[in-house]
Length: 487
Ligand code: TYD
Ligand code: MG
Image (cartoon, rainbow, N blue to C red):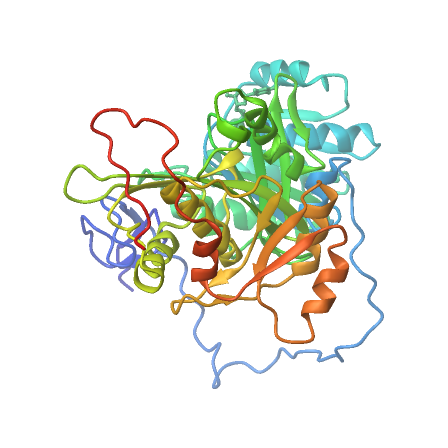
């Protein structure tokens, strides 16, 4: 049978019979690379084929204990994994180059080894000396981690696929691994998939934990962790802004626990340090700003504290907005840590339903501390920051805000209101601007958020009314015009 050459997109994994400059599936340019087709399944697997095999069906209920778990000792990592690492599972740790993946997995391997388990670290990317230097720096050089430099999956299998297999194997990174049975270069989709398949098989057969490190990349020739997501048990993304110390480990898939759980770390000169109370960290800059001289009352307009939920944990963050007259044709939008489509929707609702003219201005929106928020519950806080920036009226410093905004301007209730209020009360906030709850639930809210006064906001225009345009307090620099709220 004539084998057909196939081309695989290195971005999304789509296959095409012919080369194309642009992937039809995801639109990426120059991402198609020729790869050998996989083996065709043998004939006769279908209805008319052999009937020798059979399946053992069992009942859903059975004598099955929850999976045993190996604790790394890094509480933030254990929690993101659903309460420890599950033997026999494969964990993918993805993230931009230089974000701290190698640091995290080396720290985890060292702690596991120090705890009496057998941990191996296989580096295909860095030289042994580089890893040793890092271990030295992290203060874990004396832990009994088995370190090896290898890139051939055949070598790794030969060394590990027996009874003396370690409890944990770190592969740093999957993009450097290759199978000599495949023709394509390391890092291509088929190599990354093939190598991962072998290692996942190893994890299942020997009941060991495999941690795969994978770079997220925009370049065509290196296949990113995306193509592995469906194969592994757990997918963790390590993210953060380059200039910030904070690193956030996010579970986007977990067969053994909840997703959307985050772990917060701080990159220090001695590696990653856990941050058990992220709210305090994300609001730290804020308390500094309040003591800064020069601003009247110590508060700046254009900021609102959002009471968010990340996974199971409430996290308070400051949302900052800057609204400036647009001098050139199309107003500029720069958004960090929040969805720009959602911002466009909120500005449109503010303009159409509340009679403001926010949309015509340049808008800069930033989530302080490098956190990325995906919850629609942040809508109301974003709107508060925008209105505050526009009217130059600060949101009261002891106030948190949350609520989802509909296209009509109505503010809709969000989940976990109690947890949000509790966290805000714990951190000394006195007031919360929250969605109007259906009758009967309002009382419950007021009780749980002890020490916290809740202000129910039913429509966005009520928020606008709370932040009226401030009288001019300062002389504007020449040339600067401010847009105030329309009456
Ligand atoms: P690394 O773990 O090598 O990133 P990745 O594997 O994701 O590519 O770490 C990258 C950065 O972390 C590097 O630029 C230096 C910094 N770093 C520290 O600030 N402190 C430390 O203790 C270590 C080991 C690294
Ligand atoms: Mg690395």
